[in-house]
Amino acid sequence: MSKEPVAVVGIGQTRHAAARRDVSLAGLVREAARRALDDAELTWADVDAVVIGKAPDFFEGVMMPELYLADALGAVGKPMTRVHTAGSVGGSTALVAADLVAARVHGTVLTVAFEKQSESNAMWGLSLPVPFQQPLLAGAGGFFAPHIRAYMRRSGAPGTVGAMVALKDRRNALKNPYAHLHEHGITLEKVLAAPMLWDPVRYSETCPSSDGACAMVLTGRAGAARAPHPPAWVHGGAMRSEPTLFAGKDFVSPRAGRDCAADVYRQAGVTDPRREIDAAEIYVPFSWYEPMWLENLGFAEPGEGWKLTESGATGPDGDLPVNMSGGVLSTNPIGASGMIRFAEAALQVRGRAGEHQVDGARRVLGHAYGGGSQFFSMWLVGSAPPAS
Image (tube, rainbow, N blue to C red; front, side, top):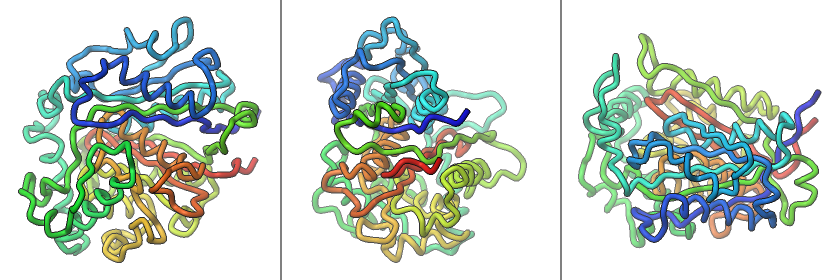
């Protein structure tokens, strides 16, 4: 039996901020879910199942919050599943929900990802000792900075590339009303003058700590026919993982990321991603990961990703816009960050991205990664149904 085509018919985000003290955790997720249902012109009763995801519970200090979120998400008496794959969890959560629709297990699924980092300390949460792993004493930036240095040595990229990415994404965020950071008057000089946190990562080249949630309503062919707005169709989706550390691991371009992208492209019939994909929302928590992931995803040859950034190709007016929403560099409720990438990709092909809409976007990639560059989730969405 063939799979059911999967459509995104509703998308909702909260207002993202350093601290959303105006709502509880339940109120935060309901804000996003309500907006997604309103976008789809559906009610809680129309939802058959709920799939939620978030990052480690230490990031909020509330163990298993899903135990009390069923009522807030209209899931009483319905199946509710939680997904966890570190920072990629927002993307993985969406893919689990999509698979339930594709397998015809459920007709309409609400998927929600969230984080309320203000209620705990993610730096402390990331510094807990893990058996047989190197200690992470300086947070995520301390872990990834040496890999960025390795990329710079391997590619010969000039030291200003990270600042160029940060400038682009922060300027893109000014067009996104939901973004956490709105830095008016930001310039390349201001980014380069920012304090160095983890050499070569400056303060302005790293992501914020955000409270926020994102939700989507996924359905099949019949549900899409009733949708009030054009849906986004899932053309391909995949997850891959690998250990945090192993002999020969390539931290600059992890095998799991390459394999995940290749699977998505195979499903979607894409043979030349640089030419056949119109835009991408890529998980870039530290600015240098834009050129690194451009190579990992097949948009550029090894060592050439920084040239796309430097040429302006990844800017809003370039031929491969990246992170039109401002990306993770501008909004980072960790558990939701991956789903925001997926949702923003869907908004683009629906033509509903507002001021940061890419003209003529028909196929857009959503990408997330997590852990020590070990968990990857991606989907490619299009404005037309996938070929049967």
